[in-house]
Image (cartoon, rainbow, N blue to C red; front, side, top):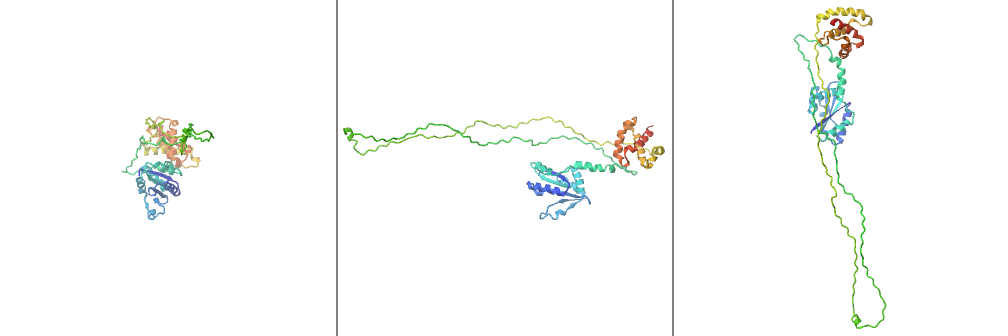
Length: 349
């Protein structure tokens, strides 16, 4: 087997329909696998139809740690295998078909006839729901060490051979009616009796005996002869040319910002922040504890060395984006931006 086609579907019923279509098109049943997940107990299993000898196999299950390895063994890249595993745990179904290089496109076409899911789009949606969880602050113990990886994508441009069609030439025989005119000669013997009354001569005496006279008729008939001649040649030639193609894409990299937070300075500013709260926000119905994250966020912005010397108008767009990404569970930016700005002004002034 040369390659493996993989498709993710919403339900196991859709996956079984894909399997049936593949089998109808001549793909061996033993080379087609369906993996289904159980989102309630984080287990995965492979689905088998009710064929003799597979009853025990249909109950086989494996832990989530082995599911990725199972997919990798089918030819799925590790990153995609881990994403597919997450999709299986969420109740989706996966179909894989191992086949030759010549039939891989046909297998993909059959899978695409059904509602195939985009795993990358699904992962973006699931990861979006985890943004709050991923942005939580973690407290480290003394002597503990942790690492934050800096990830950078590398663009790799290669090339592969694709089928772009071609020319099919067929030679077949056609018949064309042909009319020709030819002159044919025919001979006909005419027999005529004429009455005669004259004395016999000496020369006629020799004719008084039995005689036989045979006169034959001849004629011409048309004779047709065909001779095949080559009157034209069709020359087939395949030319190869090369061209330059500019690839445009983007690569991503994670940048890590390191901010210094001083506990002693925070306590000194905290009293001022409480006074500001009592003056401006006490009548909003929210306690100081609701505004403290905004003051602390402004304090952090004012402590950033790379933002020093910039006005509030210059940093507000970036500050808002970071708030809506990491602090959106605290509340809307418009409700707390004045507290953030006051915290930033107290530190920078």
